[in-house]
Length: 605
Image (cartoon, rainbow, N blue to C red; front, side, top):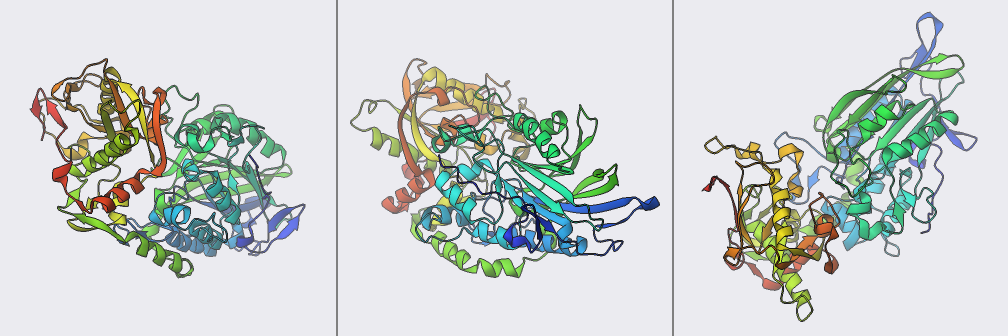
């Protein structure tokens, strides 16, 4: 694979002029000594300097404060706002307060997937086309003046060609010290960037930003990266690079890690690495001052982890996803024994719903925004009734049956006349969004896209009846154990042990009960196929998305099962095509109650 890397040793072209020293852009100071803008003489004549690093993560294609699935300004129960246009206003305020060149701005990954805006410029009007457009996320981040961004796992969803084009369009480096060329085992992307901040004392502060991404990419995007890029563990690569950065003269070492902080992992035994390893890196690798955490979509204003070797505290912060929050790390440095030493470090998060959108960014992207709005509002058919996912996490609802029906029919058609044509087809589906709606009347692209928010593709894998049973038992751990007769609150019934909605599968083609009064591993009751108890030795074809088939969620058996068919087209597009073909969506033709929650044989609902 051609690496095609560029060397980023200083600020990007978008961050303003600086003085180049030895190939490194040195940011000029903006304030006189003692002005309070980033530096001044401390007590007893000690030389001190203060600066801030701002951070975002998991932007997921949110450039503007807009929800393309509802076609209106974004809003949620907590009245959060989203988007780079909001982040830009917060960044501008902090730069004005601190002095532009006493600040840096970084991101922790998952930038180019997640909204119809990002989908449009990857698939509909792709940035990879000859004379193709500039990705709106690159345009916005360049205009705001990002200094670096770590690679997220979703950066690889559209393949390496799209990612490389996005990288080329960014005025800042995409960092991934543990994303290695599979053949040479050399970094396939920039591992780090070294920034220099000028102080009034003639002694610059060198700030290194090391980027780390998630090893799970090897599983989740296997089709795009196998044989091209390999992903060793975060801890291993941090231990390699942090001492190098210190030896190169880094006064402050930051890690931008697309990896959560809680130590959990969904890999099972498929990878020898931890998925959410940020706190482990802080604890085990000495020499790190702070970590911008990503991937987990949780808010961590500030968490201090003590490194077990050095005894020093490492500050961790994760801003909420989609541009809802901006992390600010504040550092205080003191000049001691001929070098800058971190004297204080802390972090906080700023809420983007406290400010207006930056009109410079909304104007910049107005053309792209209008194109995408027109695209998502194309009518593709109609629906006889309204359908919603609101109860989807705990009831078999028609809108999830629609996904399974389309997947099953697609696989049956593709296998027709072949070796596996006579095998029964089952299908898995998850409730990706609890707010998806197919309205009665006209159905648009955004209605269908809102039902299936990920760029997953469809596969067919062979499983036995016994494996199907174990698959369902594994899925049923999603429910909180609730004794018979105890009150049931739907809001507290799901997501047991932090299992996300997208890692709960229901299956069509079989019928079963899930007894939530029973312990995990013995909850599936009355599992039947065509009215008879399921034969453990029978063979079935499972229509399954590529994330699950690759091992995402660590469901049993499916990743190792024989693949009998696979598509490169997104399931979302398959659903859109199906609606166009049938014209009218009528649940009477596909919906049924195949599974139900029970306690001692009594339905919960």
